[in-house]
Length: 344
Image 1 (cartoon, helix red, strand yellow):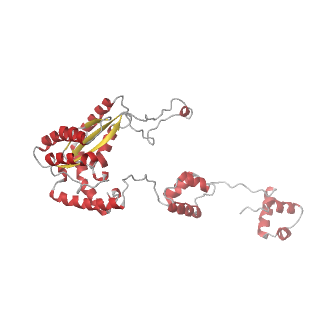
Image 2: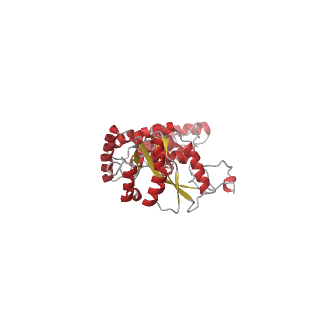
Image 3: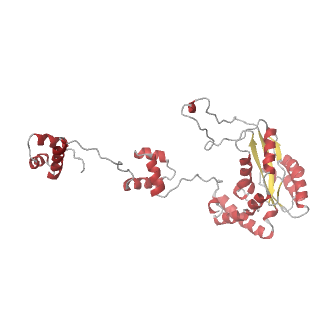
């Protein structure tokens, strides 16, 4: 029986000797309500409501589900904690509705290069050209290259780097601090891969500016050319590089034409396309993962760890990674030059 707000008045009038019909007339309520309250008074001696046993009524109602669904449609990045607070219900209830009733799952935001409409059109055009190019040439002959800065203090993973502590210890010196210096010592690393091998790691110190002269001498002539001569033994190869200023200067282009003919020039290789270069979409992440969580006392220690990690990357991984490039080119065309990782 639904609780009536007239219980105290019914009880008072009943104890004064009034009948159920008269009480209903005076209070202008239904006779059945009065009879139910009177029956409770006769049974228990008063009109107080009996506390119900069992589980409380769930707040997972059709109306609640509709409200949550509407809010998610309006903003699918809304925090479950915030939604629970706004609705005045438990977060676990919101989570249950989202997962079990609405069949939704939380996903991390995909990361990708920002692309303007002009960039998308350019990528579409050049990906088509590259697919045509690789019908004649082999993608396995490409030397994929890139540069990256590594520091002696890797950025901590604040989501997964945790400690198991008691509540008291959580506020004590036992709780470690994840920190980074403002300008940690670092080194620039240049390297490259093919489907069948890896170039040496070329370390460029922090105080060295990578201008055309440095790129040509230290990277191309002192390291890449000797490796190419030995690895390909006179066979065909194709050099890929991004088009940083030092890579595309007139003097650098002259070196490329003389020693690396057939390189992927600006008419073929699209700018703003790390998702097409195996170094960017896979290899750097692999290398970072192998030294993750380690703090190095010196840059030399960092270099040594990178050399060990680099040597451990096997040819099977290189072959699979390079072979995925054509699939990515086709996906880029399908996405009309836009971000395409969701299509893979």
